[in-house]
Length: 570
Image 1 (tube, rainbow, N blue to C red):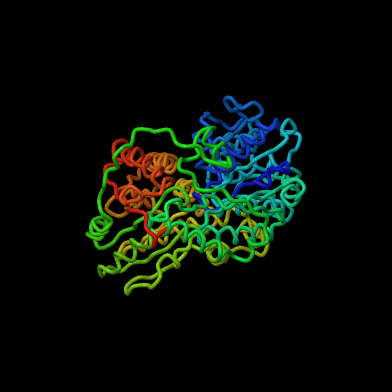
Image 2: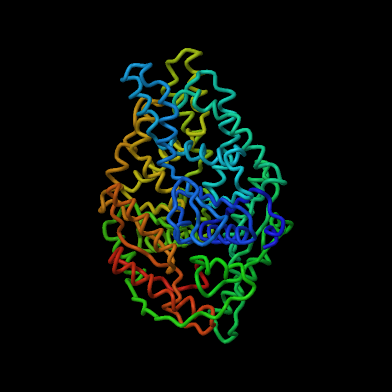
């Protein structure tokens, strides 16, 4: 890839979920290390699978990668980062303030806001504190899917501005002294992001319309943040080797059309292309093949027959039996959650049900996925900007109405915290679920890591809502019980028939079960096993699917829908 010929010190890989960010970040780190460079690979994704790709267990400290001298990697663990951050803020007050006051500070710092700022704090320290990373020639960041990454990259400026303008000395994250101490690091992080000599943003996309459109959106928003040195990688470009295979020809044509219609904003960017491989880029050998000019022949292996699973129509009939409820599609980015949510909503509406389709994913294309809206169906979106303004107005009208001028000024200052957006989105999410009492609400959720943080927030945000708005709405009070009620909420785990999406989905299911939420079933999307193919690349991918589909039934969930690859749906 071109950007590896003269790489900057910092490389950020971002893009829509499922486009291959992690694979390309790992492959780039491996390639630089094998050139003799010292490289630190950092995952900022709460649902990171860098461990699995590199076949090395990781922690939140640099860990040497087996058999690759010069390459180390780490995962920024939001929970561990939050605990460290909490202690850094509260620790200086132990023994100096009454125990009850210290306990109150710890409770205040136990919310999801703290988890976000703590993860950001760890990220900013790596980016903004050159001394802590002086032993490395290159830092490579494998980031969460676009929406979460945009927020992460905007936080240095947001928190710097908040600290500078805040006069109360307190915030939803406790005393601002703890944040102010980091101000210089945050400022250096902002400078580093905007310096094209030091930082390259690598936008990764599949040759698909939705992924390219999201890459264009990211490009524009990140340019606005000052991140101007950008490079586009089109990953998984497919060229049919068997012109008699209609699936192969359709897949090639879809990719070619998507590139022909590529948004203008991306056309001027320097570009690299990687072909679709017959084997997934797992392990060091798989990563080397990803960047190789030619893919070596696959070794013959044992093929596992893929089970058929339940039909999509039978699933819809089952979901529609109660006449109302919340249906949530969850999973790794790029597995087709939005498309599946749209199809479920349309199918329920066509059966005569009242349906509201909405999304919590800032990058989702839910309206485009629906096409013609059937009778009885409405479409919405949890818009962070609108919800944040709405929340601020509500708090000022309720908690602020009886305050004096100084009190209202302090409350307004408090509401300028970047955490307010998270709270506002959470409250809107709760209100959306509340609508499922007398209709169907189909929710297309953000990619896994961000969704986990949202659900984890269900209890933590109660305290913050109560603190700011003098009371917790009924919809918020009832959210967690409703999510845990299998008769009210049906969570569908969506995945592709590949190792990483299946294992990330299994991890998501484990997180949901720990929260007391039992998934209603799994959907394997875009499977090649139910269709006939003859192209050698597609046959290799088809042969690998059976193992992962069978693993779902045998180890993860007994209710499974296998949706065949379709030219119509992505």
